[in-house]
Amino acid sequence: MIVPNISKDRRWPDDARDLTLSQGFVAAWSEPLISKDGEVLGTFAMYYPEPRTPQISDFALIAGAGYIARIAIEVEQSNLALKKTLVEIKEGRRLRHESRDSPSFPTMYGGREALPMTTNSEASEGESAPVTVVLNWAAGLKK
Image (tube, rainbow, N blue to C red):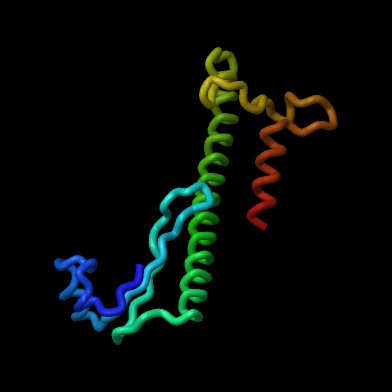
């Protein structure tokens, strides 16, 4: 969205116009941040102290900055999902030891058989348990 002059543009919300102008912003351009999955992540906006419309080079700057912002947001979301999953895996391994005979444990994660929650002591000689493999792989991502 391109608003070359906030004081004259009727698309700018009336309740925000005075506040925006009082902060010295007269023009604003924004770019929606859409994930690769089509989810709205937010908006990247640029504000200016004088009325103006974007030049060709401004469009490239807005698009590039928006692209970098989208990547940063998606990376952060992926990191949070990875951390949450690692916690669930660690808690699952702990639960396996606490309730080894629990019939519901193997069908956790939505009723699907997940990675076998064996420990290294239960794995065949020379092999690592799947949970240990996943945890070691995830730890390597942090390096």
